Length: 259
Ligand SMILES: Nc1nc2c(c(=O)[nH]1)N[C@H]1C(S)=C(S)[C@@H](COP(=O)(O)O)O[C@H]1N2
Ligand SMILES: [Mo]
Picture 1 (cartoon, rainbow, N blue to C red):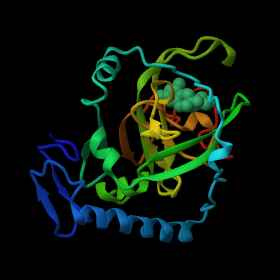
Picture 2 (cartoon, rainbow, N blue to C red; picture 1 turned 90 degrees about the vertical axis):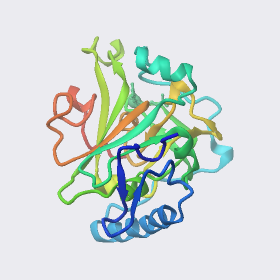
Picture 3 (tube, rainbow, N blue to C red; picture 1 turned 45 degrees about the horizontal axis):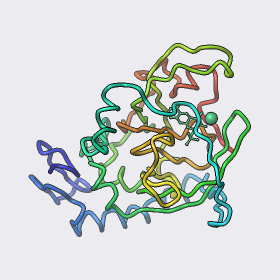
């Protein structure tokens, strides 16, 4: 199995000395665990510097909505996604690419073994509905820390498995295009920004973005990319879609959808 990193890759952590080659998995590696713990502290320091560190409200288990609407894509029809789904996502890998010192590919089993955050939050869709759900997954900031973000990086882009065709309710059929979204480094390192592999204590259902979806809790629902395949660290949004940083931002919605 080559899960945590691609076999061809070498992983240096922190760019300072630790060099791991040919490892099948780094998840059990104490040094990686230490890096992930240290990144939590780095996140806190970052927030004190830049502000915008408020937490979204968290709820209790009793508040979880009995029904959480599925919105946008309900199930990607693309053959590549269907093949991965048929295999229980055993062949799916999250790629971390772009302006990082250590590009990675991480399989689902390894992602599930990483230190995770569980949070019960309210999802607010721009269409006017809300629902409370419990989400579990590793903090994006911890993964980015392990990947080693290069100086000058400004955004994190999430490329999704689905081509979205738009909805009549949003003003007529939109041209079908790959769903994607992006956030800045402040939100990327926010403690509640996680890559959720579980919802309400069970593996993330297909409707809600299996095998992995973004939770970026202080922004509206369309920022919460489902069916995440690749995380690209970049200094410009120009190379993606129509250049506005997301499927809906490309069609007139705000890029920063703070709530
Ligand atoms: N890949 C992908 N992500 C997506 C969408 C989508 O269509 N495709 N829809 C967005 C919108 S508008 C909302 S409100 C939420 C819906 O998430 P849910 O289906 O879990 O309710 O996902 C967001 N992320
Ligand atoms: Mo939405």
